[in-house]
Length: 302
Image 1 (cartoon, rainbow, N blue to C red):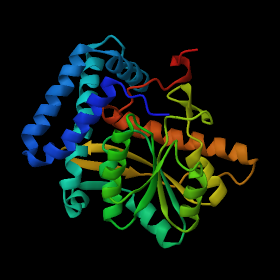
Image 2 (image 1 turned 30 degrees about the vertical axis):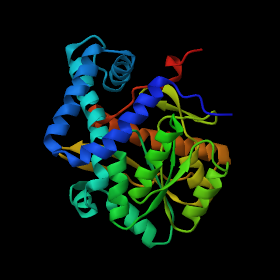
Image 3 (image 1 turned 90 degrees about the vertical axis):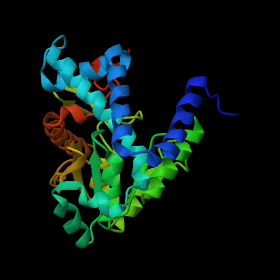
């Protein structure tokens, strides 16, 4: 059965194709200014995505939902979000040593020391900053890794995104529509001492784990904590943010796996501890948290 592609999907795919082709050919500052203007235009319209971002930020920060302060924060959030896409189009043309030089990292030793000791690493990240630039940094400092990508529509856009990330040095597995053995593949990578990077604060499956996140219940993907429990790999939460024109990464200490309890209890405990770290990182850089979707269970349609 052929894929049903809407006109909107085709327009988005064409826009991304043009972005990867044209943006690297143009000067950086003028194109960055254009993306900021686009972000402001979307923000002023206050459509569904912007209102959802504001609702999420109000929960995270405690700022009144109807305040001017929250509106300014959501404006910064949309500018951060559009900056991510601007940089996605430019990243393939930025020399890897420049990416490494412009990335300011706290806790890099947690990765280097763990891999040097022969243990695998599971890096778990919320949707913050420029996670593709963070991946380029990780490859640039000698740690190629495997990740899982959400299956975008249309298929042509998904293939372009995969090609973009593979061009940065990542191994990319599709979240759906692959061979159905993603967890086994990821487990194999970390058992051999490799690195896996996974988005980890929004569950896109039906097997997520319930956690408390900023005072309310949500679900996070089971993959990162389950990999740590089953393989002995080190689960390292990481938060990613912008630092001026550069990038910042905070790689936190390993989330310990409890010595006692059933596998389910251990996975739940690790998931909650991981989420607690995300809370701290997002609270420190709320403008760089790109969560424009419903996240908490009480916000989901019944």
